[in-house]
Length: 248
Image: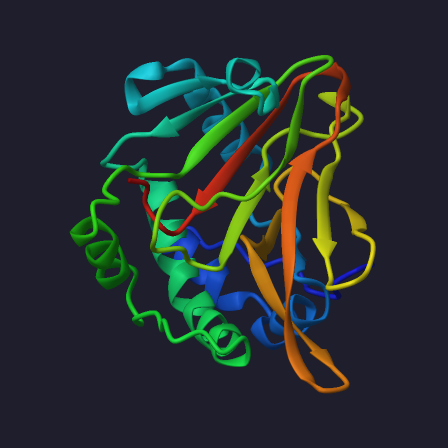
């Protein structure tokens, strides 16, 4: 599946805000409703990807370092950023939330869920922190040959924003082979359906964290989704993960 979403323009004055505003949001919303995910091509340029990927090797900017195999999550590792987040990550999180909150509220209404999300990300984070979810969740993931990420959901506590983002910081075919981004959905009384999301270096995918609404013959129902990464064959793959709720 292709989303038909054009690459956002990059601006030297307000790079993050301008490119988020330039996304075709009606098309992205349609793709999210149809599949539970949508690709934003070229969200970051090559130099931006390289700079973010290099942050992984400066551990003073992170609050924790997780080896997946120790927890049964797969193979590979990731680091959660500490507050204050690097400016590009913080700006992206703030700008994207403002555009995704109306979609999240519409999804919750369709699924019969009472929770609604405020317009500003700072207000939502205040809600998370008041409930004891105060640890930042944006992260960098690093995979080498044979590494993979099991199918999972990034929930972290009572307060969950229903959409998240991943940006591929490495070039498929040049920096690594294998390592496809995977999504599965489980519809009631049906077998699971899987999707391999096509991503190039600098492309982002917006996707459902947990459940999403699907229109059926008798109205909307909930579909559970999970995401992961297939095994790398060669090279190194690094990814920025952007989750809008914080962790307890």
